[in-house]
Length: 371
Image (cartoon, rainbow, N blue to C red):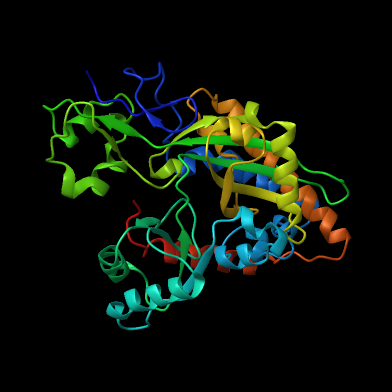
C-alpha cells in the first residue's frame, strides 16, 4: 500500500488508502512568472484606469500599504478591539539581538512570560508571507536551533499554538458603502500525510506518494534528519506544519461551508479592525460542523491587500477559473481603494509600495526553513 498524502472530511489529517484522481492541477506549481503574468497585466490595466498603480494600498487604510507588502503581522493583530481579542490566538513579539543569536532564546522566553504564553508556541517572522520561517516550537532547544538562522535585529512573532486540527483561509470583502461584507473564498488547508508500512523509509514513502512524489523538493529538505527512518505500519507522518500551499499543504475549495452563521462571525471580527475591507483571515478550527456554526475557531493571522483567494490551488480548479478569481479580487481591491480615496484616504504611492516589496523579499530570503 502506498503512503498517501490525504485528509479526513473535516480537514484533519487522515488516510483514505488512495489518492485523488488528480492530486495536482497542471498549473499548480508553475513558475510564478508564468501563472501571474496575466494577473500583473490586469493590475496594470486597473492602475491605468484608476490613475494609481498603488491604489489597493488604500483598501485597508490603517494597515501599512493596506497589507499589500511589508506590513507587520503583529501590528495588525494589535489593532483588534479588546472585545474581539478572545477570537485571536494571543501573540507577542521581540527583536532579535543585533549581533548575538545566543541571546535570543532568553529574550524569547522573557517575551513569552510577559505575555502569559507557554510551550508549545508558533514562531514566525513579523514581516513575510507564504509561510516563510514559520515553525512550531516545543522546547527551549527548538528556539536554540531556530534563531541562528533568523536575521539579526528583526522582529519575530511568538503566538500561542492552537491545537485545533483544522485550518482554513477565509477571504472577506466589503465595499466602504456596504453595511455588511461577504466571504468570497474559503479554503480548507490539509496537512499532507504519508502512512508507514514497516518496510519503506520515509524518503521512499514521500517519493511513492501520488501527490508528494510529484513535488518532493517541498518536503525532503524539511525531513532531512528523518528520511532514513522506517515508520511502523499504520503510523501517519505529517510532512509539513505550516498551512501554506507553496510550502506543501493541500488546499481544497470550501466555499460551501461559508454559512450565514460563519459569515456573521467573520463580519463581527472584521469590524473589530478599523477600516478593514479586504483580506484573508486565517483560522484554526475544531471541526467543520463548528466552523459552519461560526464558532469553535481561533484567528491566527490577518492578511490584507496582498492576500490571495487560495481556493484556486484546489486541483479541481481550472486555470480559467483561477485567473477569473484573481481578476475579481484584485478588481475589488482597486474599487475599494478608489472608494476610500474619495473618502480622503491616500494610497502609499508606487515608490513606497516598491520599497515594502523589496524589503519583504530581502527578509524572506534570509528566514530559516519553515516546518
